[in-house]
Length: 303
Image 1: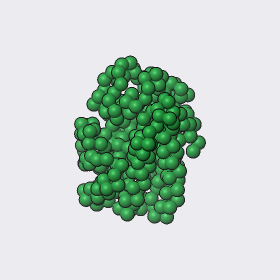
Image 2 (image 1 turned 90 degrees about the horizontal axis):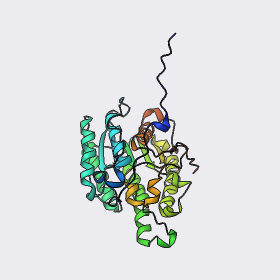
Image 3 (image 1 turned 90 degrees about the vertical axis):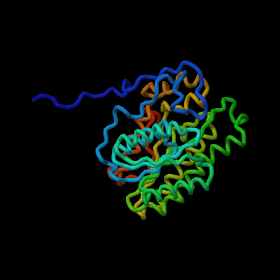
Image 4 (image 1 turned 180 degrees about the horizontal axis):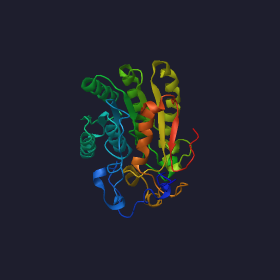
């Protein structure tokens, strides 16, 4: 009998290590600024992701949906049949439009709501707009984050930076969960983005890493609160993923070797993270809640 099993894909060779030579990207990092140390644009699944209807006619609200992991999740959700509301900073409108085009090319609706998630009023506006457009929220993806590496350690982390990191990464997640839950019915899902930094903090990312640990803890606590309502809450913890945030916020010497420390020996791509968000939002994960799913190239996450 002929062996009909598909050829095994080598995970180490699935994506090449990006070329990181050149100048920094402007902060906070835009897909449209693919120059210098980002000659190779991240892979969001444009040419590879094939949907199978796992999220047919669902409504997803995705923060930080303009680029990187957020764009990959939006594309995957749309190809799985979901309509998508995207939010991002107003300065990233061009990237937001590019993500929306990918959603619409998949035959789904894309609603763009730019704004600043560090404002509780805007978080309320975002939820209200989603409900106004679609009548409900089936999937909330809290993906937006702010980080700024400080090689000098805690002495270089200003109160202004610390406040921005906390408000973007933790406060916004809290506000959006609280405001979205009344509009989520049984079978809905919340997915928060944690990080390998939650359990293996890099000293230059002290404040960022603290928020990512907080996200993992918040996820587990909220999951227990809303399980009886038929709503699941999980988290994805990415490791080193090649997004515009990296060359925009990290020192050059760190960018050049980014991802090489993993057992896989390479950086990950946004498309390789998006599948985790699809799984956790789908009925296939119906018995999974309060979980932190690591997508780290083999780096352990123990929070």
